[in-house]
Image 1 (cartoon, rainbow, N blue to C red):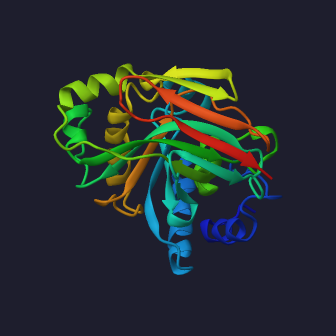
Image 2: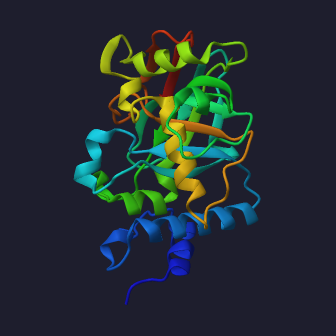
Length: 270
């Protein structure tokens, strides 16, 4: 008999998905139920004393949508205990407890106001943004071989492991029309040591990281079970490049052009 939403919440709180079957392997478990589980987990984590600080956008590359049966991005909750502010744009992270970790270089925004809905106008969306920064989201997957459906990702804590954020750059006084073009046109290069391991850019993120804000604003606004997206939250917008698998002892650095954001470096240990 299929597990109920509450049973999934209890199981995932206990296991973090380790050793659990894929939620989507059970009949009827779809993306809507995945979000019901995610909202329930948010409530349970809040009761445990965890502080919600923002959201993450996942599967933001349109090229992946058809194979996964999606027509939009997915999103998840981000809590304070998983967010790290890099000192001088460099941080050392332990991979302990992170199953099958991968690295996603992303643009992170900090809100100063509630995001507008029903718009994909990047300049309008950026009016609600206080700052931006380069970030590394370390994603994880407890299911063998990263075999999953979007409903599994959403239900299993968004596959979120950690978010490392570099220096914040204020948007105050910036010409938003120019910034929107820069965000869409920016090119990102990811290095492992001195070797280029991935290249990408803003168009990999539903046309632009700024446009991605409109996607998540609408998804949350239309989901009556979701915690409303508030001002002062941060949003990490989705990976700019392919996401390499991580091994202790490696050092990664991401560099972007045209945004005046300093490079961000991540050293990995056990």
